[in-house]
Amino acid sequence: NAGVTQTPKFQVLKTGQSMTLQCAQDMNHNSMYWYRQDPGMGLRLIYYSASEGTTDKGEVPNGYNVSRLNKREFSLRLESAAPSQTSVYFCASSADLFNNSPLHFGNGTRLTVT
Amino acid sequence: AQSVTQLGSHVSVSEGALVLLRCNYSSSVPPYLFWYVQYPNQGLQLLLKYTSAATLVKGINGFEAEFKKSETSFHLTKPSAHMSDAAEYFCAVSLGGSQGNLIFGKGTKLSVKP
Image 1 (cartoon, rainbow over the protein chains, first blue to last red):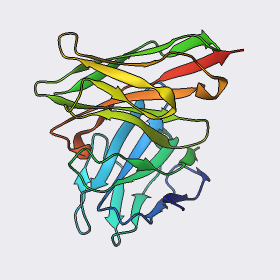
Image 2 (image 1 turned 90 degrees about the vertical axis):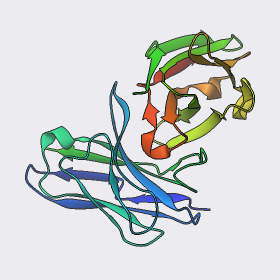
Image 3 (image 1 turned 90 degrees about the horizontal axis):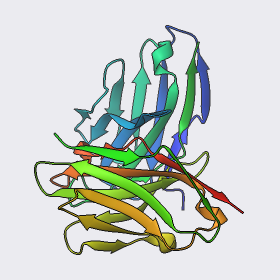
């Protein structure tokens, strides 16, 4: 029972490099999310996708782009990485955007930008 | 706008002692409230959620939380701490039940001493 799978687990980038974080869920959920977690800051929403074909900005979208490739997959792209994007990134999914559907999280991607 | 405040970034208790993790929220409409737990190097897992059905909510692993509208609080408790409860705990609030509007607190790290 995989749940939410994120790749890679760790990544080191130089400033200005680009990369894509991958996320896939096997629970047939409609909604998917990308969060970043920084010490003492809790989790902050970057982007979310209420359903296949839609994406919306969250609290901290600057410097990121997303693609909802299909119902299962939701990727996060950093076009030109900056040290301020050093963080742990979590993908999550829920059955629906509303109805208080709980979030199911992946195990995170630890990104360092030097 | 809604917000959530967790009092105490670190809480330490002895094994067998009462666990009390504090959460206060600010919301202009009836809130939906959640507690999530994060074990080291893992994503968050739902502990429990309040959706107005009952003010005392029971969750997994013996945790419960009570919604007190007059105090705008949703504190998490467990009568007897176990070593395995050591983790970081996050309170979260959403407006209208939309997970796209889910705001997390900064987290409380719980340590359990033998």
